[in-house]
Length: 302
Image (cartoon, rainbow, N blue to C red):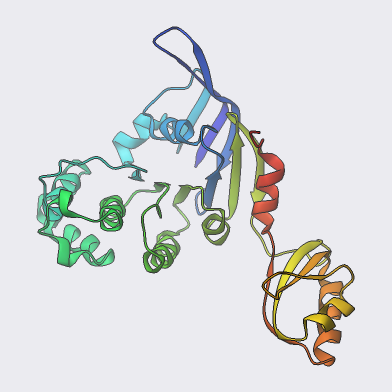
């Protein structure tokens, strides 16, 4: 559905300096996919989103959505978009803002009230519908931003830092919202610094740095042969855990840090420690698959 073919974008400053924001990016996103975009600040994520929305044109290469240039696609089908920072007149009320944005999105007049009520209910902002935007908390303003994107039933949905400002409850609910938006004829793109959220929501995550795609990670369950470091929280039996897992150490808080092992070795060690009286409260990788890929792909500034 979305194709970037050798796309580059160069900006020129007021002083004439050339800034290469995106370099030779080739990427395909199929209908039915949720694809994440991750990278450090200045990596090119915002420029990629601007290219997808048709806000800027590539300096080289080609962007197509449903076979069309982005602006043509937007004019025919629209793109549901949640910006990182939404700017709306502070004197508007929540309800007024959604009505105006629904009109701009092409919602028919006879459906306007029903669609506005639907998204207000979906984001649970009914108690704020008559509040002015300037009176909203950061989290409620973000929920308004998500609500306005749901007004448009588009085959493409783009989220830019969608959980920024949301509390833990609404961060969890956002996951449910994305799952509900999934369908076979829709592509969803989520740009985020939150690797944990991307690993939970995305099918693939595109890691960008210095304007280039450094790696595309297919999010999946760990392979049985993959060696991963773990942290084990124990109620009792930390010493037994260390005795049966070579190289394991007890952390300052009493947890057990296990060096990179495959699943067979991990399970054998856990079973032996439990047989010796250890009680395991929780087990988790010390670093997720996506975090490992991100750290190995991204250049860390000194």
